[in-house]
Length: 550
Image (cartoon, rainbow, N blue to C red; front, side, top):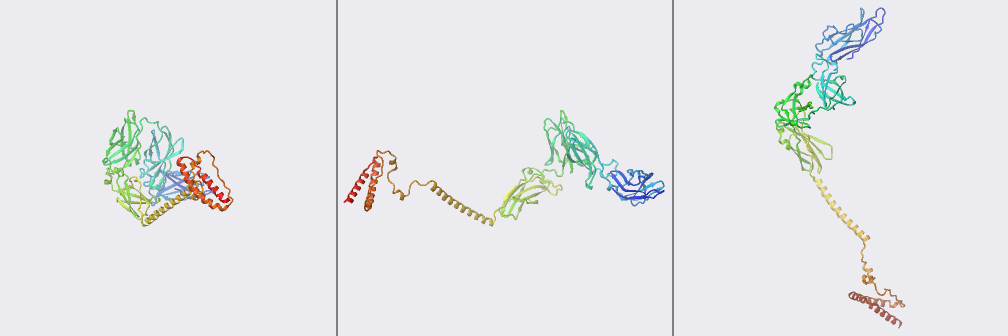
């Protein structure tokens, strides 16, 4: 507490005024200090004295340890205070021989409210993978300042490897506790501070303490200790890597860990969990009344006994295992979904539902959205209304114990998704979409056929020429042209001097073509080539020429 004040010592023999200022009161645990800054150091033989009184008593007493002080501070820890919650008044003055200054009265204060929490005293013991802490509360055993709060202190530990102060780890511990998950044969350093959390008061850190963990123990400690409820019994389980080992388990009431001092002799043996050869043991629930407990396990074999395992806390009121429910969802209409919550196969074999009434925390959301709706339901069948048609919705749920102040419950069930039915508008759009799709398919088929026809016409034309062209080509079979003949085929040319007979020649040619076709067919049957058509043609031509000359 900082209190500022000053007083003046009347001048004597022409000396300057003596004055003191900036009076400060410091209280750490049960240690009381009064400090001030004096501007009279140049004046010799000046002392200071202080008095105190309980506010409202009008009975000033000399303050022990603060009489005729030549320095600028004094310790009045020896003052006898019956109640640290009563207000105290202090006054101080300067003295020189028979001359004294006027009293300066410090503002009244309540010692408990002005007191600071000092550093706790710490004692360390090492194991291979843990450090045992024994912490003494701030103050002394006869402390009047923290007499009512000795069991309310919580302690915060900062621990690090001596070789690397950057890897700090902070834990909250009890007065008698362990720090686990350490490495063998490593030097660890730590510091501790005390707190009164309900009063939001934090103390100062203790000095730094360092200790070496031991070498790895020959018999390792059990790990992963768990305790579960199976009907009317508790099942304690742990992990251990070796066989041919016996185990022992103990329990302790949690409130004892808050009391300073040793409590190793307060641990008790768990029935049915002594000298067991399996990595679990079963004991009745009625050995524990309602409350919070700690359990621990250690292993033994022919080579020795391990250190105790990490202590496991459990609460008898909330320890029953609650399995996640099974969810089913069904679309009823275009705007609602029906949800059913059922028990899992594991929970059907347990008595949890009978011992503890359950409620269900249900989380419901649209599959394409992150916005969730959370509801609590006592019913196992309920409906979500006012939904969108043809939309996928998802749901998950967990079981909670009703009226549970710790809000303990199961893990969430598997997520189930379902699509709502189509509405009237959706049906119309669906029909329109189907019709559009069918029409589009027909158009695509027609376009493809036209495209294939064009490709065929361009790249794969017909081998047979049109009839209008074909009539001008000889009807002589193609295979006859490929056969070698005795005489070379030549074209016959005629010189026509009179164009008036062209018509008659064309008519004659038509007759010749018929006759030639007949002869060609006959020659194909016999396999022999005939030139009768050529001879007859020559004769006819000669007759026409003779007629023309006449």
